[in-house]
Image 1: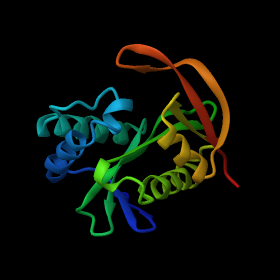
Image 2: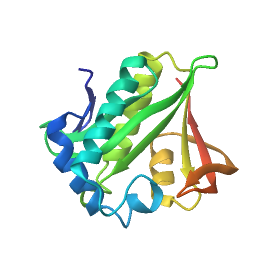
Image 3: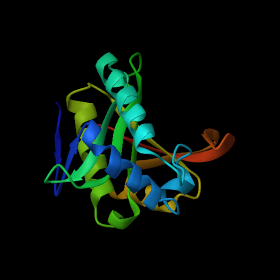
Length: 177
């Protein structure tokens, strides 16, 4: 199992035992994560978490996504999640996303995870570019991207779907040094 060290955090794939903590983290974070992530809702269940874990395991096996839980170094205390997806094999770029549960926000987890995920994309997945696409108005996530060294490239119209509606999104990028 691939694990990434990220300062005070450990990124590792989710396992079934993480489902209760994952569901609780989503329910706890509706005023922050829930505002920007269409999949997050106030009744999120352990069964939904297990289904998502299985989907991500299959995506990892086929090489289309590499999703991780963000944990404290104990590997048990769940802080959030992050990953690389939408891998474009022709042009060697992918999308990087992250979320942090409300009780652990503003403690550096998202920045540490972003840095570790980008390094993994460049060194192990041979990506030439990593994009971070953030719904317009999500200033907390934009601040994370900037602090992780991403360059703001544009505000793209109708770039994301949020609860079924097309919204503008800020596009940031990271490239290898």
